Every structure is written in C-alpha cells, then in structure tokens.
Length: 271
Image (tube, rainbow, N blue to C red; front, side):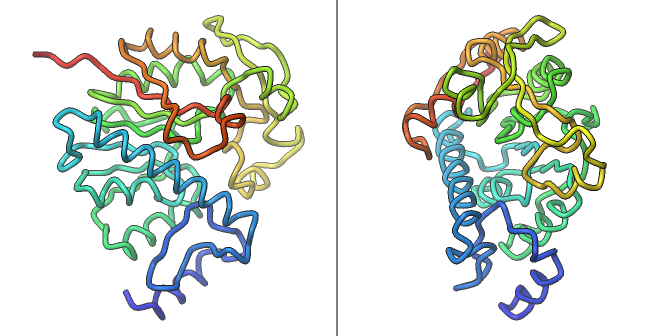
C-alpha cells in the first residue's frame, strides 16, 4: 500500500475522531501525530502497554515463542496490540464492538502487512462459544469499562477462553482511584465482589451518543472498578492458580500505576 493510498484511506476513516492506537503506516505517515498533543500522549501510552504485554507474553507463554500461538485480543480497538502479536507469528483474532474501530483495525492490519488477522465486530460480553480456546488472551483496557452486572460473568468467561495465559491491563478501585476519578461506592456484584462505580455516560445519553464516545463504554452508564484483591480472587476462582503483578516495566508513573495494574494469570498445563 503506497503512502498516497494510505493517506486516502485514512481520510475515509472519520479523521475528525482521533485515533486511539499509534501506528506508523509508512515513513512519516502516522495515525496520530504530536501536534494533537492530548491524543498523541494517550496513543503513546497504549503503545507502551502493548509493548509490555508483548514482552511478558514472549517470556511467559509456553515454549517462550508466540509463533503459531492462538491469541485473542478482546476489545481490540484499532488493532494495535493485534498487529504487534501478529508480527511475532501469532494467529490473532480481534474482537471489537465499535464499527469505526473495526474499520480502522482492518485497514491498519492491511497497511502494516498483517492482513491475515481475523477481526470480528461483536460485544466481548456475548462471545460466540465457537471461537474456541486460545493460548493467550489479551484483555487490555476493557474490564474497567464494563458494568457491575458484567464483572462476574466476564471473569468466568476469561477462564473458559484461556488455555495458557491471560494478560490484563485495567483500572481497579483504590483510595487514590476514588479520589482521582470520583468513584461511587463501594458497590457489590451479584456474587458479592466489592468495587466502585465510574460514570461513563450521562443518564440520558442516546445509543448514538454512546457509540460516538469511542473512549467510553459501549452502552453501560456506569462501569465497575473492582478492588485489586477482589479481582485477583475472582481470577483464582476462574481457574488461574498463578497470578503475577507486573511492577516493571510499567508504562505509567508509580502513583498512577498503583490503580492501573498489569496482571498475568496462568493456567496449569497438563503434563
């Protein structure tokens, strides 16, 4: 794909909405540039998260290689993490709910030389059981955008989907998170798991308005931020006996990282 073709395609993908993921599609042709300081900073942060997840996966996955491993990227957005894992030889499936992000992800994969990535537009809370199981499941930046009624079932589903390793980047409810983000609570899931609520949308937001808020939840007015120890206990209950917390490398400063953990949850492999 030539730089001119890339520029033409980018102009068709709602350029008024800043990209969330950082790509260099061709020399000097980026999805988001430093001139858009706020969104460039956010996209750079997401790229760093992807770098860390990829590094962890290569070190911790069975066989220490992603070649031919099945990887599921849930709420894949514009496909940044999906492309990174595919470049290491993984067989990647990305699932995303928003149509704009889905269109951008398919374009980005093609432009980055990874057209074999399979992207599915769908709700991560309503996955097709026929997707099967995956060596690695990437659950980055989505858990803290799901509602309180979704938490218990989603964690159980992650346990069902994962054969080897689950990678989670999320926000959790802590005293600092409550202060910085005006969280409400504590509140409890149907299974009695404790956390706090974060407002995603106005009460009267229409479905179209919620769709257009591309960095917010897909539909729920409030999202649920579980306490960190609650999340870890839930993962253990979902069949992950080994759960590790990544302290370094971490893409954010120490204070922000205190409620933005990166977790590695491992399954036991049959001998």
